[in-house]
Image (cartoon, rainbow, N blue to C red; front, side):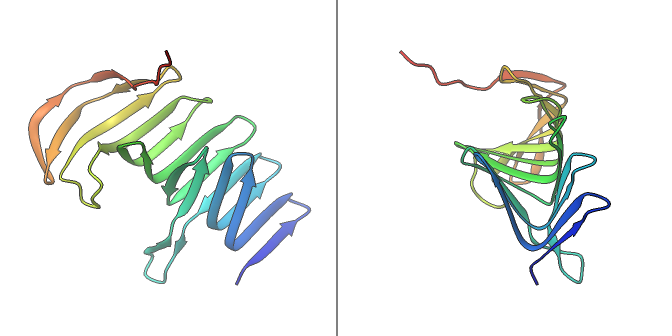
Amino acid sequence: KDSIVFCVKRQTIHLHGAGVIEHGTIKLEAEEVSLDWNHHIIAALSSKGIAGNVEKKIVLTIDGVKYIAESIHYNFESQRAIARKLFAKQDEGILRANKIKKDRETTFYADRATYTTCNLAKPHFHVDVRRLKITQDDQVVSGPFYLHFDGVPTLLGFPFGIFYLPRESGI
């Protein structure tokens, strides 16, 4: 079931089964992992069942923070990445995004994202954002966003938003 296929001519490595890659504080766990040395790309895919349902998702751990996704493509030369169906929990907040892009070292773009502090699988409340940008100085810029309660959209929303993520300060 677990196997490694290395193609010398194309300079690719494919890990099938329980693939784990660790480098420093980064750990990637996925059922399908491909490394393309010519194009400098690492691609990880979730395992799917016969009906096409996702059986086991990708787990990416960076500095102790877990990110769960259906697919991740990362260019280790340009440090750009794309993740689909991402779930991330950090401190009290939970972020879900249909697609998220990493442009530079600390600039992220999310498409169709939700943010909540409710731990339930179907949260009681969340903020629904169409587009979101998080910059290196912890500034969050969003397109239209709306508040939802028990899955029902409300009229409470704004055409755009600019927020700052809280930073810890020392005395």
